[in-house]
Image (cartoon, one colour):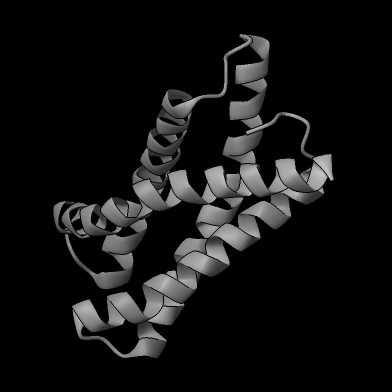
Length: 140
C-alpha cells in the first residue's frame, strides 16, 4: 500500500483483483448454490463491477488518510484495510443481492457472509502480493 500509485495503476490493480475473483468465485458459487454457471457469472460480474469502482475510490482515500496521518504500513494496517473495504461492499452489495435474487435483506446478508469469508483473506493476500511485486518491479 503505497500512496504514489497513479489512477491508471489503481485501475489496473482493481481490474486484476476483480478478474481473479470472478475466475475463482463463478464456478465455486455455481457449484455451491447449484445454479447454472452463466447465471452465477452474470451475478458475479455485476457485483465485481460494483466492487471495481469501490476498489479504486476506497484505495485512493485510504492511502491519502494513511499519508495524512503518517500511518506505518504493517499487518494491522492491512487488516483494517480489508475490513473497511469489505464492510463497504456489504453495505451496498446486500441490497443488490436481495433485489436480484428476490430474497429478504436478512437472507441476502447471510448469503453474503460466505462470500465475505472468502474475500477478507483474498483482499489481504491480493493487495499484499501486489505491493510486494510492485516494490520489486519499481526497485529493479
